Image 1 (tube, rainbow, N blue to C red):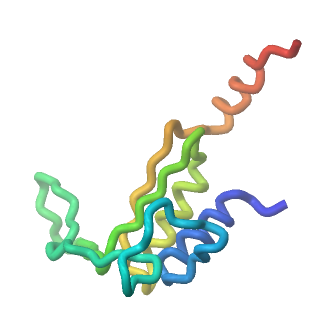
Image 2: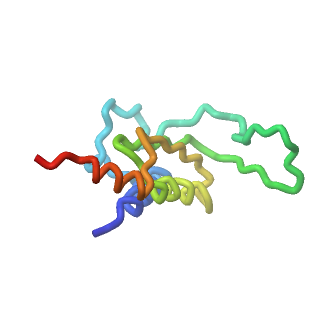
Length: 119
């Protein structure tokens, strides 16, 4: 069986590369005419973390193109979060924003399994 974070990473890379299949992942609303799967970005400023301390010798990352927003209902583990972070690096230079209803670590998962009632 393939780990879910590998499938998630492949899907995010397909979104970034404009290769995500509309047959497998149809759109809820019609896409604008002349567009494939991504909308144009209206963002013109760079994305920089807002900190009070000066960043001496540190590089700030700027992103190009539209953001990729991923939301997972039911919970996300940290390896899935890491796969989104890995997609931001390299030549992609796209910002990936990830969210979920909960973050699940191994101990919480085992506790949830133990709390299930068996009828």
